[in-house]
Each structure stands twice: as structure tokens, then as C-alpha cells.
Length: 351
Image (cartoon, rainbow, N blue to C red; front, side, top):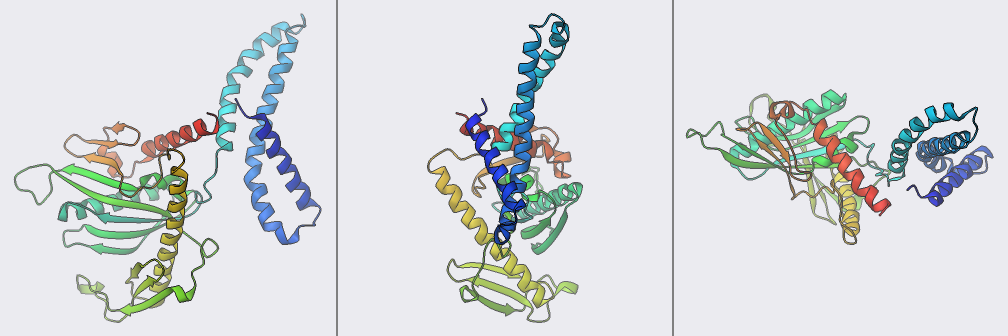
């Protein structure tokens, strides 16, 4: 059942915002009011659609009492009643608490875990998997920092992803990804288990988090690498230390100015993510937290190459389409995780 009192409160607030912006008395607050107005408008549209179908059902039921209109009413009523639960569900979804970070770009951090060279190779596979997924979404995928191995894997990589609704789609990917396969370095044909950790963080802007200059220490150094054309011959690499937390961020592109920009962006994002994690921990202390909490230590998915399957342990979903998943076909997992998260929130909204 949709809580009528809450619907009335939302409509009243929306009407107030509309009047406030129209009378021109809130010039100093116009940006804030406009943001709240635009956030509420799709909710109010859903409320109006819901109210309209309730009204139409009521009117059609009254028509049943009119002999001349009864046949027409009997034809229309089943269709209206069939639409009601669909519209009601959409309305309930619109009432769920919104994550302000959902529309933000994201920073992806991938790190090789247990498993040595094979873990680094798997980390590289995950990087390419996300690259293909992002390309399919029409998003910009940029590796801003990477530590490659001689075998073509990655000890760690930091990626910036920009586009529409990036964090909303990627946020469920945070956690430990496990792979079971015969490594290329294994001569005996034995299946090994390795792991890589993925962290998805909403990219923070200056407006989200301001870092005082007194809170950071900036060091420049000459980065080391595999040599060749990528060797850094000047002290352009940057290391930023956030003194209050001890967080350290590095960037080793060729431009020192660009390195500082990248490192500050990653630092700001990590601190913003830390704040979000602390808030999530506080919420979880009073209720069971939903899928997508971003727990970095949680084993979320296993990629089993011998059997060609991928299993997500949070929702007990197994797909026998490993090749497609490694080519970036993640939508089935992401859609299922989103639906599960919404179901959990709906149960809390309407216990």
C-alpha cells in the first residue's frame, strides 16, 4: 500500500517550491530550490499517474451501476486494474531514498590479490572487462595510473570513468573477485584460485569535499618503470600525502601539472568515499545493510573458467556465459543486483 500521507507531503512541498521560484523572492536560494524541484518532479509525475488511475478505476466501477454504461465499464475495468500494481510499483521505486552519487562519474581501483602473477593477470582481465562494458555504455574510460607486470597483468590500476549514471551502474562491482582457472604459467594443468579487489568510488568534486592546503604534503620524484619509451626521465611524478588520515596517492604521467591534478582528484574521491563508508556503517549498525554497501573485503563473484560459469554470491546468481561476461556483458548481473537492492529498500519502506 502506498502511504497516502507521504504522497500529500511530497505534493505540498513541490507546490511550495514551484510558488517560491515563481515569485522571485528566493534569488539567493534559487540553485538549491531548483535542484530539489527537479528531484521531486519525476516523483510528483508518478504520484499524479497513480492518482489518475485510482480515479479512473473508481469512476469505471460507478459506471457498472449504469445499465447503459455497464458493458463498456466491464471491458475497461480489468485493464485498469491490471495496470494499477505496475504503476504502484513504479511509484514506490520513485519514493526510495536517492543516492546523490548515482549520477556522478566514478573512480575504479583494481588491485591484484592472492595468487602472484596469476592474480595480476586476472586484474588485467578485469580492467579490460570494465573497459569493454564502459565502451558499450558510451562512457569515457581512462586509465590514469597503472602498475603493469612483465606478463601483461596489473598489480594495480586506477581508472576514471565519465558518463551518464556511471556510479549507479558500477557501484555493485566493489569487492573481491575470485578466478578459478589453469594459469598460463602452470605446466601441470592444475586449476589455481586467485583474486583481485575492485573498489568503485563516486568521483568527488570541490563542492563535495574541500581539502585545505595545510592538510596535504606534496612530493615529486622520478618514477621507475619497465624502461623503453615509458621511462620517466624527469622528477615529474607526484606523491600526495593527506596528513590527517595518512592516505597516500601517486601519479606518474609525463606532466607534473597533470599528475598533481590526477592525484588530487583521486585523493578527494577516496576521502569522499571514506565519508560515505562511515555513514553506511552507521546505518548498518541499526539495520541490515543492502547489497552494494561496497565492502571491499566481501567476496562477491567467482569466475570459473573450466566450467565457463560466473557466480555472484550476494544474490546466488550463476550464469554460464563466462566468455561474454569477460567481454563486458555485465548487464544481467547489474540489473539483478539493482533489483535486489530495490527490493530490500522497498521492504524497509513498507514493512
